[in-house]
Image (tube, rainbow, N blue to C red):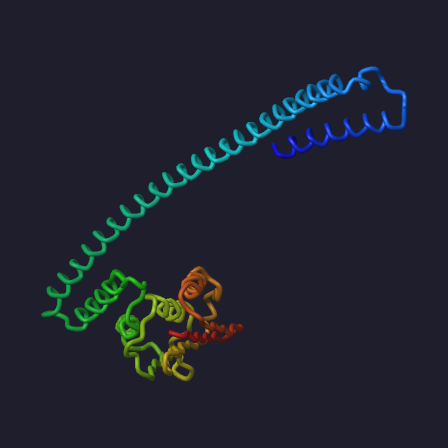
Length: 278
């Protein structure tokens, strides 16, 4: 708007300037320029005309832009509302699924406890296996604290229960060395990470070779956790070192920690080392 006013003022000044130049140098001019009042009125009228024309164009253009902006904001608001509705629906579905998953496993835990109590007086060995399975299930269902973590010693206890249960399944014939070194006090970790690597050992390793047993090692040096596994591969099983389980572990570790994961995978052996700054 200021630009239009300035332009109109400049137009009047230039017209008057030309009039006086023509008059000073006695240049032949059209009759209307010989009458200053008429000239001034014509100039003002012409200026006002173009001013209103420019103002109308500016107003129309501004209105269209504002209308488009409002339409874009309304579309964005509608899109956000639809996304929020979809999110609320997904959240409700997830909550229902979570509640359902809580009911079914707890029913299973109660059943396992019933079996343990029923079998303990007849077969202590079988009862102990049921108790180990119950401990593993209970740990998997335990809610984490607000930081999404559990105590490191709880994660290690779960690994040991898993090893004992599988040894019981195979009559203590599995060839696997397990060692732990260091103080776990005060250290926390996201749950069910280390067990994924241990499960891979049982899934793919040759565990019946006493001359070359599989190895699971846990070391804690200050706040650094060093977890490693080693095993010979079973020839009859195709090993996938980049499976869904490991990719899921990587994704979870990326969220919480600075870590190093190295995998040495060849035709006959598989080695894994994980270093995590807890």
